[in-house]
Structures are given as C-alpha cells and as structure tokens.
Amino acid sequence: MNRRPHHFFLCMRFAGSRVMVAGGMFLAPSICALLLSLCASLPSPAHALGPDWQLPAGSHAAIDAQDMWLFGRQATLRTFEVPANIADVAVGLIAQVSPPPHLQAMPDGLLIVGSADQVHWLVRLVATGATHTQASASAIDLQQRPALPALRWQPADLTARMDVATRDGTGLVRQQVLTAARSAEALHRLLCDALPRHGWRVDTTMTGIPCGPQPLTWPVSSFWQRAGATLALVIDRQPSGSSVFVLQTDPIEGRLRGLSGSLRDWFNQVRIGDTR
Image (cartoon, rainbow, N blue to C red; front, side, top):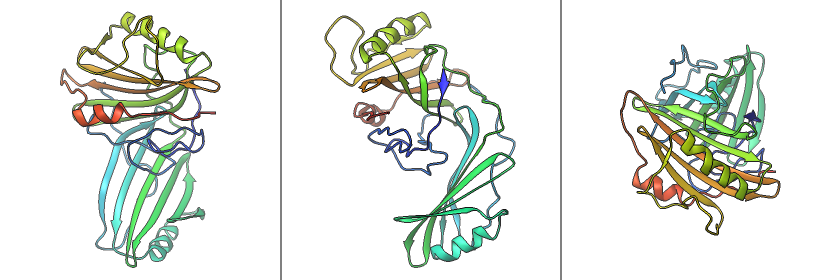
C-alpha cells in the first residue's frame, strides 16, 4: 500500500489532501489523531518525542498520548491548560529551543514549528482568555522505520491519505483514509471478496450495506467482525476514483471491545469529501 502523508485536521478537515470527514475533534495538523476510547500489541515508545516543554506554574496536562503511530511511525500528542497570556507562553517556549522555530499566525492563535534529529514537532497555542492559553504539542519521528504494516486484507494499490493508530490497555485502534483509482463500485466488490478470505464476517448487529448485486447508494458503510476484532468501512465515490474510511480495532489477549452505540451513530454519518 502506498503511503502519501498530508497535513490535515483529523475527522473535521484534511486540509493538505482536501479530505473532509464529518464528526470527531480537532487536533494539531502535524500529528492528528482521534483519541477514541477504543484502542495487536506494540512496543511502548521509550520516551516522549520533541522538546520537554517547561510551562508556567499552575499548568496541567489534559491529554498525554504516547502510544500513537502516524503512518506507522511513533508520534506523541500532549495538550495543556496554561494560566498565562498567549504572548508570554509563546516567548517562554521559543526560548527553550534551538535553532529558532518557525512561527505562523492563525486566526485563533499561533503555530510554533521546529525539528531536531529528524523529530519534527509543532505547538499550537490558542488564547482562551486574557490570562489563559490552551496549548497542544505534537511530534513525529521521521527517521524511525514504520512499525505498522498495511492491514492484511487491503489491496496493494490503495494510497494512504491518513493512517493513525492509538493504543490503550485493551488493544489497538487504527484509522485510515485510503484512495484508489478504481471506481467505488469496483472497490466495494473487491473488499467484499477479500474480507471473507481473511476471516472477516459481516456484523449483522450493525446497520450497513451488505455485499451483493443490489443497487448501491453512496457513501456505503459496512461492518465486520473477526475473533474479537471489529472493522468498519465507509466507501465513497471520488472524481479520481474512490475512497474508503477505515476503523479497525484489535483486542489484546482476547479482551473484546466492540463499537459503542454513540460511535456507531457517529460512524453512520461519516462523509469523505474531495480527495484530489
């Protein structure tokens, strides 16, 4: 499977590749992951990537995600609530790194971008009050070889526009946006044939479009199960062919974890926009 990374706003807007998926939450565009409560066993990262940011007294971490992989490479995401104005926070962070980082003004705040030893990092600051700032710090190691291979059931000619994996104590969740030159109809038939060969069966407890000769409306969603793992797909037409949104969860040591009712409702509303 080809890997073509783009900057994106995960599950709201994939800016670089012009992909949109309805639902989800905003995260920094250099790392991007939807931190679901779902999450086979991978080695834990030895250390957090990027600078060890020192923040003003009274700051606290809201999210500290170390077990994360972007296009198969180790990545981290940390978010903070900082009791200081955005200008003071920015000056303090810039003083902690060398060489000087790049700065980019945003409508609602500031981006600070830098790299060291093939670790690329980004900090996004948003002023939420005169003396209050929200900060998200993300980083990815581009020197590291990808640790996650393509999912076995996937055709080799799919191009990855997004590939994010996160892990918790019960297993791994992997989310992808993939595109293909073939039509959506052809991709749907291909996956309907490939998945059963790899041991997947249709999840009849979910509402989706079954495989078969019946007329299709787009996008098409389908849900699958295999030995405690779950798989949800949304296939859609694209001007250049087709796209598929993938959500696969794999348990650790038989710990079963299916899609929650709220996530099922969210998934049925997923739409992938133009991926040119």
